[in-house]
Each structure stands twice: as structure tokens, then as C-alpha cells.
Length: 625
Image (cartoon, rainbow, N blue to C red; front, side):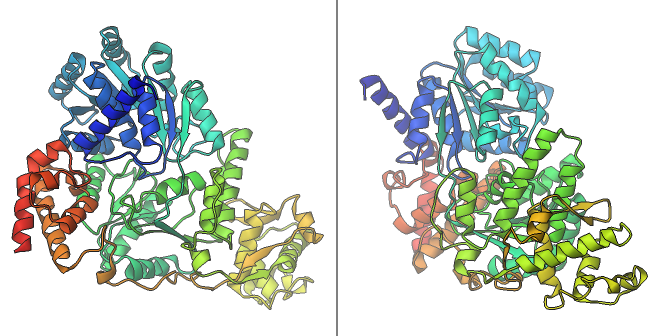
């Protein structure tokens, strides 16, 4: 390593320790920081909680100290900008954001700070960055050598294949065309190979280095249960596993979000709704409460979550199937950012498969896009139907090999399986005979009634008791038949049509009818298939803590959290922006008696030591007494 590179690494490490209070970089962070500090472009794929922000914040500070001026961070969310800037200012870094929440006077003041070069980082939305006015300001900064770097956060938003496509991101290729000498770093937590290629092409990052970290989040336990009264299953899950803890419950529709929040509240669980149909002020108020209060559950559509930095979200639950694995991974990744045990729980049923297939089929998008979306949905359905390790399948989707984790539902409770090939053939034969018998199509409920030999009004009306398939499936119950149909639809052998979701055979059904396709299904009703916990219920005493603490350490940790809450209220910031739980726990364990000792605690930078050091020592001293 030459002397210039060594100096760069040393400078970056010094910033990491002085500003953020960390002794060393994690994983690929050091290589990324060194590359960007030196002026290189980068595409960074790093899981939520992996430390993506430091990959551009440290280079921005290093380059600013070298006289390179301001770093512009493209961020899609106002709430994220506010919290990131608050955290940087707490750490002693001059940062600001420009967005619609600011007054004209405040906007002008920040623009003056930016144009003077005193600002280290400026956060702005993509639609602002690409306006003629803002580009003219960037031109002026570049001419004076005061444009340090561009960081494009949530870079998957630029891809039509990504799960959060935003048209405003497409215009960001102007940054390469107009400022080719300014380094760019694009960052995302989720992107499969197709999405990565799209990001590189659309942002013109062909010459950039690509850094891909492991996608594994070993602290997250994945569980997918068969829907059987999803509300009751969710309630059992929260009460058994996460009572009084923060979590997110994702629902597909706005109506379901509001109904779920209201129902959870009626069951004694503090819950709030969040979706794009709520007015701006209510969304902000609910998000602020979720970030600042302990133990709240947010029922939300996918409008909530991108950039949520709350570290102690202990669970993410899905009451409806996401669109694809990227969405699932991104949403579940909001749990356990602090590295402590967390759960990703999903209830999944036949209606989910039908709805997702229908949304793709009825989309006005082109055939190529629809094919891509169907392939992505197929991968998610395979994950949901799997009876082997969830984590192995999840990581394989992103091109990462692994071994069974021993920590997902299938590893902890290997499900019993059964050969459903013959049952599948019976179901397909019955659908075929519906069509032969007058060309009629029927839904899943009626099909199951006929297979099980139930004489209902509809069976009698259409004389389906005369069909050769009537009663041939009496050996299976409703749940087993629904599992068979779910798999047939998931694999594309059956499709649904119209508003009543009637069933129709596809061309591939004939291979199943001929017995050329084997279908091995998980046995219905096995733990945790009916919402049963995948582990022994935790009591309040078992709640995860950053470090094992003795009785006095626990008392000090509680006292430090109370002190932190007061500081956070005074500064109008989430508590974790002041200090993470892990940092407070280390203080409670080590019990430093001097500012020098306190400064060695991970997460205590120079500015925070100066601002809070003596108060922390006072809290520790009084708690120890």
C-alpha cells in the first residue's frame, strides 16, 4: 500500500473514530470509503443495518476537510433526511436538507451555506436535484472546486425491475453527464442481478466498482404460516413473542391498514395506521411517534418504511403477500437493525396468490415487464411454499450460497410433507370437467365442494354431483385442498379469471395430468403452520438486550435510557439518534469513571463526549450508588 493510500485510510479511520465513535470499519466499508475518498465511482449493495450511510458520510467529511466542499445526497424521503441530518449535527457534522417542509427564508439560508462550501452534506430529493435552478448552483460549486461527491441512496428506485421504481430517479443520469469528475456512490439494500444491471445502465455507472456485501441477516428469524384466521394468528404471534415491542404490520390495501390498526388497538396493542391516503400531517405525526416512542406497532402499506432507521423494531409481519422477494427482503430488513433477535413473520394463503397474479395480468405494462414480474412472483411463491431452509432460498435469490441456518421456521420445525401429485391431477380433472359440462368456470370454493362430495345449492343447480370427479377428493380436508390449489396456481398450471376468480387450466396443466410433474407439499396444520410460535414464548424478562448485564448494569442501563429520552425530547430527535441502545449498554457494563474512559466506548464520538460526557458520568455515578 503506497503512502498516499495509507494516509487516506488513516484519515478515514480517524474520522470514523472522532466523529462516529467507532474503532474500525465493518466488512467492505473500508474498501468502499477508500475508493470514494480517492474519487472513484461505486455501486454498493449492503443489507439494511449494514452501515451504508457511513460509506458516503465518511468520504464526504474527509473530502470536505481536504477543501472539496459539499457532498450532495439524493434521498427519496423527507423523514429520512430529517433524521440523518439530526444525527450528523449531533455528531458535530454540518449537514442540512432541502425539501418542501422548509420556509422560503430557511431554504435561502441553507442555499447560502451550500454555496459557501461550509456545508459538509446536503440532502435533497431527486426531483429537486435535477431542476435547472439546483443544477446551476451545482455548476457554480464545481467551477470553484466545491462539489465533493454525489451519493444516490435507495438506488433501486431507478430501475423499472426494482420494487420501488420512481420516475424522478431516471433524470439522475445528468449527474454523470454534467459532472463527470465528481465521484458518485449509489447505494441500495436490495437488487437482484437484473435490477443491478438496470441501475448501472440508467445511472451510467459502467466504470464504477461494484461492492456486494452478504445479504444475510442472521439475527432475523423467518417464518411463513398458512393463513387460517390471519388476525388471530397475528395476535397470537405478537402476544406470545413481542408484547410491548415495536413492530410493523404490512397490509396490501389502505382500508385493511386502517382496520388492522383499529383492531390491534381494540386488543390492547398500541397501533397506528400509515398509508399514502392519509393527509401529510397525520402521516408525519404517526411516523414521528413510531420513531420516538417505545412499543408502538405501525400497520402500514409499503408507503411506510423506506429509510426507517429505528434500530429496535423487533418484528415485521405481513398479512398479505408482497410482490416479490426484493420487496419482502427490504420490508423484513427493517426489523432488528440493532443486531438483536427479531422476527419476519408472514401469513400466506390461496387468495394472496390469486390477487398477485391478477394484479400482474391486469397491469397496463408491456409483456416483457409482466414476464419479469411473474418470474419474481414465482420466486417469492417458491420461498413461501418451501419446506427446506428459508434463509438458503432467500440468499440464493441474490446469488449468495449458504447452508441451513437452524433459525427459520422450517429449520426449527421441519414440516411433514406429502406427495400431492395425485391430488393435483384430481383437481385439474375436475376443472376440465367443469369446462366440458357446459363451458362453465367456477372458483376454488365450489371446486373443493365438488372434490369433497358436498351437496350444496350450487352443486345441485349445475348437477355437478353427476360428474365423475364428484367426491373423489373426500380423503382431504379444505385446508389440504387449498394448499394443492395454491401450489397449482403458484406454479402456473392454473390461472384465475375475472372478478370472481374462476379457475382455468393453462397449457402446462397437461404435464401434471399425465403424471409428468411431481408435487411435494408441506403437510397442512403442522407447527408453526396455524400461527403457533416457532419458539417458546418470551416473557418480559427475556426481552433482547444488547449485552448481558448484571443487576447493577441493568439498573444503570435503565437510568441511561431515561436520561437519553429527556435529551431526545429537548432536541426533537428519536432517542437512538442520541445514542443507540448498544452504546448505552456498553456504558452500563464498563461503567467508565472518566471522560477518557467514556471516549473509548463504541458510538461515543468527540462531539457527543463534549456535549454529554459529564452528564453521562453523573448518571452512572448516581445509579451505581
